[in-house]
Image 1 (cartoon, one colour):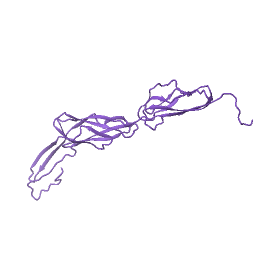
Image 2: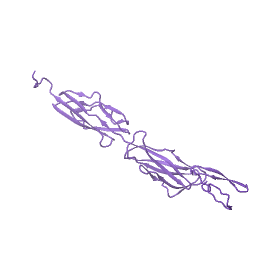
Image 3: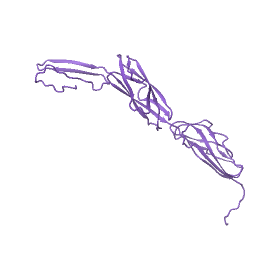
Image 4: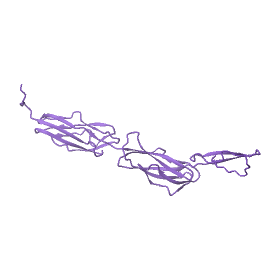
Length: 277
């Protein structure tokens, strides 16, 4: 009851107006109204409010899933009129409109939905930052009818693979001998998306990588690591040798995808030092 919270019987009132409103227009409501005059006459009436009823497919939270930074994902969202009567959609918008955008099905112009009929939106998600598991970009789809406003949650998660490859120091060995990284070369993916290594470049003598285990292409799930076997150092000349081995992958620029290999070859046999024995 919005007006006339207090009825004043005097002075005499021949016409009295009051207004009743629904508290939450998203839900149907019922009210019974009783009016009693000074003579004891009681009049009882009732009023119904049948709310618009809209449901979504998929149900909320409407999930765009995990999307790689720099890429987009378009989600189809259907708004369905769950009533038998016509519902008029007057407006549709996003509360934030930053990571999410309506790319098709925009309202206005208004859309009349018969009972059971649906209206489809195409909502695009473009993440701007990487999120750890359980953390999302959130937005809200708002749809306004003639009587009410409906809200549904949208979410998406920005992900990205990363790479970290350890360096390898083969140490000092006699020339014309061989040493290998027995434990393998450690490669980590500290990112939130799957890392794909498609090629290994710049392996030049006296360094070798004759057998690649695991074989290319190499896939490393987020948060996992592998050991690449088997880098070896086979010097045929005296001196210090280096190689910057490049791991071609889908990680972003700036990640450590270059492994620095180093080794030193010396001539075997006795040699003179300056130590005074």
